[in-house]
Image (cartoon, rainbow, N blue to C red; front, side, top):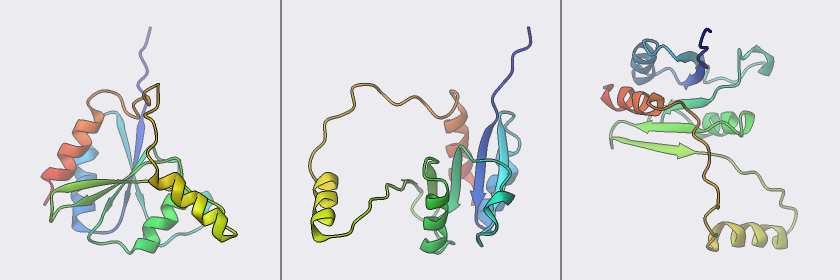
Length: 142
């Protein structure tokens, strides 16, 4: 019986040297499929696949571009890489409809009050070792 491996689609957002280096490094990982996303949003139907993860260089992108991709792929985690501080920052979007001060107050309370931890842990997005390889590649690039 043949074992099929799941290709993890990683999208690289940005045109920086860091993203070029990340692409070269990550293309050597067999269970990753690497796609480049333009910093200029175009026709949504042109994207080849919904990525499992988006990587971006925080020192190169305008926040509107990042926000546009978070809105386009709300269930896709985004990792922002800041090579100057050697940090990787996770970003996500959680949209709320706010039509009044009461609505805004409810969102503020929801985001600031302590919440109990979920009883069931979230399943991993990647197979074991893939996240380590992603981070190792991101943090070792110039």
